[in-house]
Structure formats: C-alpha cells, structure tokens
Image (tube, rainbow, N blue to C red):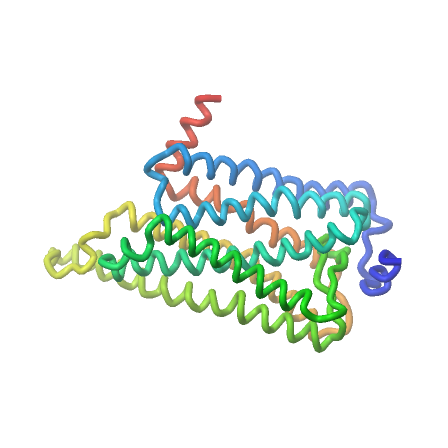
Length: 316
C-alpha cells in the first residue's frame, strides 16, 4: 500500500527498468562517497585524538562535524545504496522515518556548528581578551549540545507536530523526504526551515568571516608597514590564521554542496511536475558529498594533520 502510494505520488520518477550498467553507476558513485566519508572522517577523528597540536577548542567544533558526517555515512547512505540496488524502498516505514529525519537533522545541525565555529573565529581574532572566557572546552561542549537540542526540537516540532506529516521514499533522491498534507504546508515548511536553519546561520557565518578576514588583511598590511605597535591582533599567530582559513573553506565547501539541493527544493515547491531522475540523483550525491570533503580540506590546508596522517600510515 505504501509502495503504491509512493509510486502514485512520484509518478514519472522511477527506479524500475534501469539497465545493469545504470544500476552499477548509480550505486558506485554513492558507494565511493560513502567509503570516503567513513574512512576520511574516522582518520580525521583519530588524528585529533592522538595529536596534541590538533586538540583545540575550534577543533572540538570540527569534531562535532566529524561525528555528524560519520553518522550520516553509517546510517543514511547505506539505506540509499540498498534502495538504488533494489529499485525501491525495502526497509519499512520506521527506517524511512529514521533516515528522513536523520538526513535533515544532521544537515541542520552541521550548519549550527559552522555558525558557532564562525563566532569562535570572530572572538579569537576580534575579541581575543574574551575568547578564552567564552570558548572554554566545557562551555564549547555545552554549545554543541545546545545546537543539537535546538536542531532536534525545532525539526521534530515542525515535522511531526502537524497531523498527516510523514516521511516517504523519494525514488529520485533515494532518500526519504518529508511529506506534507498540502502543497501550501510543504511551501511553508521549506521556506521556514530555509530561513531558520540555512539563511540565518549563513548570515552569521558570512558576517563573522567578513569581519575576520578584513581584520587579518589589515593585520598583514600593518606588518608590511612595520607598524606592529598599533596592531590589535598581536596575539594572532600564523597557526591561528591557518585554522581560520581552513574552517572557512569547510564552510564554503559545505554550502557549495547544499546550494544545488536548496535550489532544487525551492523550485520543486513552485512546480507541478518533477525534474528528471538524474537531477534528483545529483541532489543525493551533492548532499552526501558534504559529509566526505572535510578530511580532504584538512589534508590540504593543515600541516599538523598531514604529519599525523603520515604517522598513522607508517604504523600500519
């Protein structure tokens, strides 16, 4: 019954009648993303634990992202892979609800953490005298838990608070998505969640990094002019600047992955028909890739991580 309902809802988007080559290609790309996310984030987490130079308050926030990405790769991605192989959702309605909620929750939670990281960098650069008072390891842990609780409670209230809302399998995205009782309800949900979970954190992130990099640019200009005495960033060393640039690149990469997904979602609620299945499959690839890119960014931009990674390889 649920399968028939889903087929009727997403008529025109089907996983049936695919060739073997098409199935292998669909699953192969996602499997590669999945393995990369698991291995890369696990190595990143172990590196933070083993290397004292990588254990910092800022990296405590990055570790929250690592945990989020690992959870996405262990729970959500395999269910999508199984569905692409089977050509339909074969895991029952309960797992559909779990996957659908988890994908939304982890994406929103990651954005809250990135906003906190931007604020962390702002205080480190612009308000160093307050930084150590506000961003202690304990208080940062509480901030992470508060971000998780906020994302969970708000998402749960708007997802399950309305009678008739449920998650159904989207055969194009290979992800369970929230189904609303009306088109109007879907539009309100998409717009509200976009403002609360995307645009507001994005505004905070952009404002903080704009102020930070403007100050860093001024810092280097003053150094070039040999007017160091008037430099308000004397406590900011090159390592901190590298950390700031690294987490900024992580944010940019995250948005580059999710912006196409947001565009597809917003266009979807304004249309009466569906995109081609490949468009929705690209949506899934972009969304899941956001959980696999952080280790590469750290590998390119953080020397301490590269050294720790080399040590780990030699041990094995």
